[in-house]
Image 1 (tube, rainbow, N blue to C red):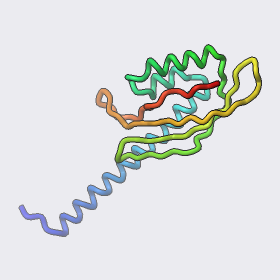
Image 2 (cartoon, rainbow, N blue to C red):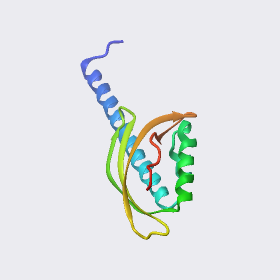
Image 3 (spheres, one colour):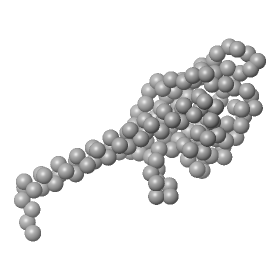
Length: 139
């Protein structure tokens, strides 16, 4: 069977459109995952955020950090995502977020910048965005 030039161009266009649609879906999933993760931190669901979004091999260290944050009495009051970069073709993403928090008995609000590294991975036949970097150190 011979493929003429017109059919080859049509096939190439279909493949490019499919790749673009796939990358858009991956980008949207990245945005949803990063927003959900940071929102969970804000609402004191730190352990749940780790169980949901942390790479499995790094969860234990994350949960220890979450426990330390809880023991110190740190309360996150707000967060802002300053920058977000998703590279679906590499399966990586970076977020820089800023968190406002306080530690009792002080009522002084402090601000912390938190750089997050994300990876798009398949675990148990399910692809999702997982966090590679741990929690920041809250003073």
